[in-house]
Image 1 (cartoon, one colour):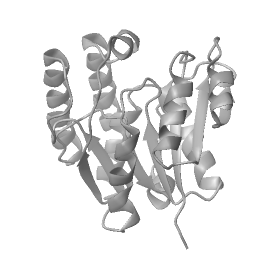
Image 2 (image 1 turned 30 degrees about the vertical axis):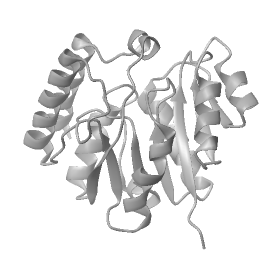
Image 3 (image 1 turned 60 degrees about the horizontal axis):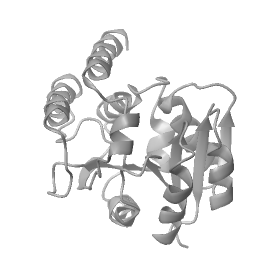
Length: 227
């Protein structure tokens, strides 16, 4: 029997992009799409529904981590075998979903993590590249997980790995928490080359500047000592 792949997209204030993102994912051959509208005050929910996604809503803005957790838990309940997390701002390439899920579907790993540094297609700003490389060093030092890209929202997780992970972080530090759970639970993982398309829109709406990166690193340290 063919395994079910579900694409989960956390969205907040993305009415300008979310419809196109959903349609692009559909054109790539993936029809099971869950958008979690994380308390948006614009037409994110309506645009996602019009494009054909299943939409879950948070009454208030809880953060990307909480939105992805809502979407992943829903996907598991709906019988998904593999859950793909995908950004709402158009940075990710939906044509790369198939190669992302391939090692999980084959059973060679439980989780595949995207890396913008294993290929040459991502136009990564210099400051961001430095921050991500420093983050990868912290991941290796703190959790024993060897990565080239420390904070990539494009990933594929088996149903079993989602069920094993204890995810509690509501906001951006959830990405680090996923990596810590991979190390703590000894979940089999690999990295897959992906392309991140930086645009004026995605950079304007990004929350991954220098100060947020420092805050995430600090929360990683707190999480490590209190876990």
